[in-house]
Length: 227
Image (cartoon, rainbow, N blue to C red; front, side, top):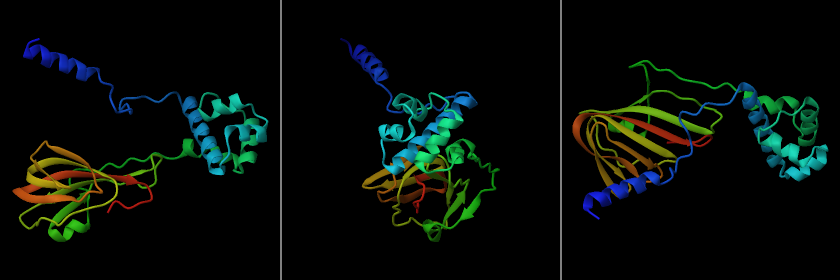
């Protein structure tokens, strides 16, 4: 086989590999009724697991069949009010608790250009400007995301090293910087990105071309600190 043929075969094989990503960014949720069923099922399962009981245990406590409970927890069927009442008594929660996830408000934050909030972070004392572009605290995903526009200018110094919980994504907008993650160095110019485990020491190693601007998006579990 020729070199071109080998490259073509390799490309086809690479395309045939299943994607490790399971989230479809263009997915559309089912009808509102179906979403309600899924929300109810999620809460029933969460309360059951909190008590440390099995589906069979809950079935025995409520006189609801194992098959019906399975369908309820998986959002396949709509439970009647009588069934929900039996579940609320067995699980020791008010009936309204099952609707919490469905009724919970989903927030969005819109920030006009130049209207982000300047915040103090550890790098501020090294002349790094942090402009917070939005923040949503408690949410259904259980993950906190902090998007920053970071600016490094002539007054900025390289900073020893950052290290914190969560994941971080950088996207270069302007200038050039050599960025360290662990023992690796990355020369970043506009359009480059870096995605990494923030538990490893990381930060600007060399400010090559100023001014430097890049997006930094930090995510970490709700209830912990990203700094």
